[in-house]
Image (cartoon, rainbow over the protein chains, first blue to last red):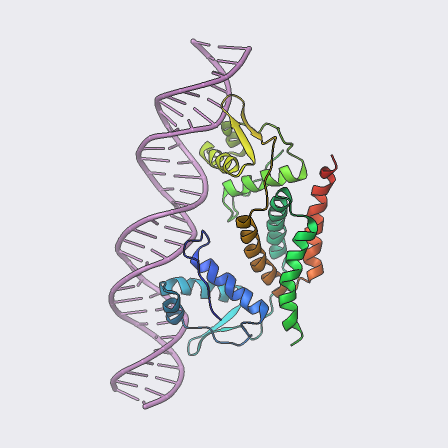
Length: 130
Length: 130
DNA sequence: ATAACTGTTAGACATATTATATAACAGTCA
DNA sequence: TGACTGTTATATAATATGTCTAACAGTTAT
């Protein structure tokens, strides 16, 4: 999977990497059990310091997305089993309150917003039948 | 409108205030043309430094949500006219890519996600008929 | 054993963000 | 004049982000 980093973005580099890996898992671009590049390799590919990659991998490990073997490096968790915890649902609800409020005020209709959701979910469903 | 600030949250105080004001505008809890508290008053009410409030008001002014009169203070822009600019749509698309990907992986169905959107939008529609 | 890979840790360093604090300035209005 | 507005200037501090160099510990193949 190719990572596209925008260095001018306000979004921190480590956050961009993390987001794209999670998206990759959801779309199937990254398969469960698949190896990720080593911290030094990925850092070198992107052109950043390897500590930034360590931060990403550690957070992904902490949240259960990946597992880390001393020998073989980092891989997408083959037994991925994240759930909609109350804490997560609260964060999501809060985020969507803010996001929909601004979208509404900018003239996005409910249908337009739902269309964005459906368009994204369609990318995920295709691999659900695997 | 009462502001609820979580000081333990990872979300910066100024961001929480900003979010809640925008939500207030969308739901109608804050009417266009309505006065907001002075920087010192709001800071005192919440128990924070007034510079933090200045930051919020300046950003809201910058984005067009409020206007500032030297004499009467800050009010919700009576001629509020925000639009879905290409820049905004790009930010929204990127945010929703990340958000839906994690939601999907945590087991939220498309229908559950859309339900959150509809629930929020219903709060906005009620005042649309005013 | 040596070399070449893994991830990890320890520092030091620089910069930006977030937030507080004190003080002063300029305009408005009763 | 006094009491409000928003604004500006400093100083300070904690935290977040990112880079850099160096070393350590485990694994694997030659």
